[in-house]
Image (cartoon, rainbow, N blue to C red; front, side, top):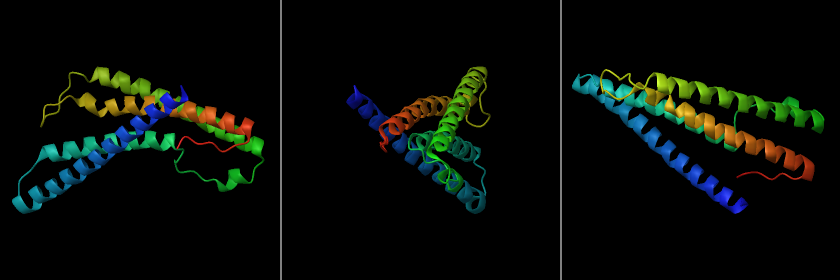
Length: 167
């Protein structure tokens, strides 16, 4: 069972990494194209801005979910490292619980907004505006799952006195 879960994790991470690389490339290409069109060709390209904005939304949210997986979000450890281990455990557990609540709220409202904007379309390209809220659903789901995994690993490592990580 654990091997199957690790395989699913590896597939999800690989898919997210490929998707993140793709969105960054699309974002850079669209911005470069917008600059070329605006200053060299003297032509407006509204679709380039929309694609770049869409790519950055997807990139930030999926990248944020992957940072939760590897526990790589920015934080200041200098204060918590001088505290007793039991206090560090409580603070870390509290942080994970807050992260889970945040992910659940993002998931719920992204889902609601996705349904509410299902029939709204953009003016330049005509695609549905709910595509801007869909990454929140992915972010919420992935973050919630990996936060639960991090809680389990925190408790496991505390009980077993190990430093097992998902990576």
